[in-house]
Image (cartoon, rainbow, N blue to C red; front, side, top):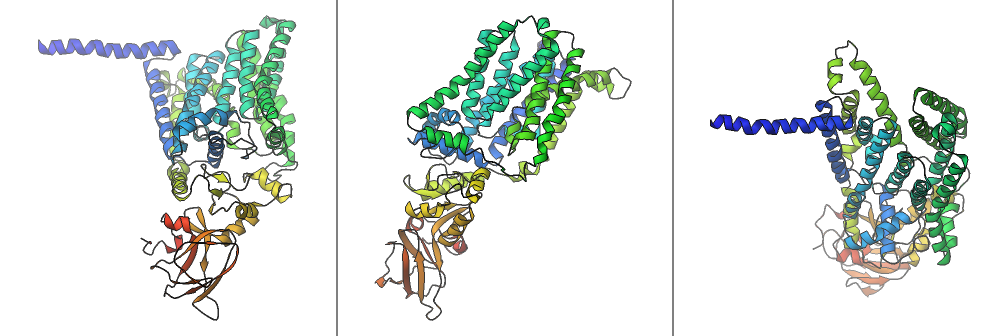
Length: 588
């Protein structure tokens, strides 16, 4: 009797589990519970893998750059005037209050990656919804999984960068415009969402052009009358959309203009980024023919899609999204001066909607054949196997195993321990996040090219002296003059971290006498790896930290230390030693 009672309680539970899987399969139009459970398992794998990658994948220099500007807003500085940035300011302004709550932490970039993570799921929902509108709920589900496990999208979409707010807002805009029949209200909401994209990045001009061109071509391919739209209604909706697009960037520009910062705003967002003949080696001149040669084929393919789709509304949506993909990626290849991996974030989800639809159609065809694999495909479709292959390909990516964000976290921890809030640093793009930079521009391709052409003053060394900058970080590209200045006037005290000072060398005539020059005025100490140092500094007994003005100085040693270094006194007080001394007992 007890066994029967046990069986009677177990069976309904099992039945309930089967019914949940079956109901899920029915809702999403899947082949059965096996496909539903495969989709659920892969989606959970995608989410867990995203969380793991956030914790272990190397931070990009752009993440620190954005975070430094956010820190500046939170500390009362103003973007463009006090800190350089060549992006629109909405992203930084939004996150400044959040940063103020978290505070100066070495783990700040981890925090911000997780805080931005919900926007990844917004993008995933939009991908699902677009897949549903173009094909089916089933295609939408598999599109989310396929794009989520695609290596290039997976790694780029986990970073704390403007693009990972920009791309989901773009997908929301597309979803809004496609969800139902076009109305004035829907056009206004879609335009406002694209306006937020402009508030984050001026690259949105390409998104706007893709929308306008693709909508116009798709409208002519499907024919306006079949969609039940009048020219007057479409013109009003287009006008409302464009007006809404200008609202957010217009308010931002007006706010900076009223604050007397229009010139700074204009230079950083427009003048700085527009540079003729930029990086010709990365963008050969012949690439410009890619768009006019290939885009007509995309239009022809869209025409075939329209002919193969009997329902006009669905035909328009498919042609519209397909043309957006074609226009966007071809325009990037033809006209964008410097292509970055994050530039493709708006493209991947839309492209994988079509890939999902194609794979499902091919899988259904194979399932009806006499192949041995047909039995498996009847239960679990081809996209599940492709997604699993994507996952193993990502696992095989060397950078997933080699790269680690601990390097940046350790650097920030050292900077916070070494410096005070008022100290300046010399870094490439704001890697130190929590400290003011003595050199205004950030060191990236456009800036370096401007420096090479003499369009920007290469005065990093002069600014370092003027601001008494005693800390330098070498984690990126520096102008040659700045590199030389760091090599001559700073000593490494950790990975990529350098402190004002120099190693002392004995004169040719007296091995106890050491002549040296100081460039950065600051308080210095003379240290050795094997004990305290004694002697005469500039004719006075050396008794510890002393302020040294720029110029020539002399130290005559009375102790017997073999290796001596002049080091910024604050670094010595906080137990930083030259890397060259690190194998010797540290100063207690």
